[in-house]
Length: 150
Image (cartoon, rainbow, N blue to C red; front, side):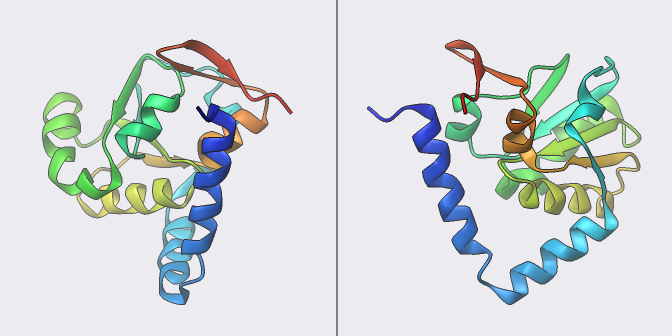
């Protein structure tokens, strides 16, 4: 059975292949330019009014997530359909939202889409969960707390 680090490395390689598309690069660049990108250190003191929205797929979420008071998992492919029920109805369209994914692009795309849907306080975690881990932070899973060992 592959360990979590080799699975993340394989998935990261697949994500890099996706970047070959010029059109996708343009969409990602637009999202990054229009959405505030916050550093991992900006999340060190996560207040109870910030909602982390993990836009990775369920199996990615199961491999580990950033532990915070409020973490929602809404896969990027279902964001538009789930955001109203999971975010707007529960927290309002002015909720403080920070999106994240594996490396950052899906989180940026998701944050831009949330802005287009009327959410007014949306940011993205620069570098995604890998950026979070690279700064020496831990993630949580059903196994407990996990750290990236370099």
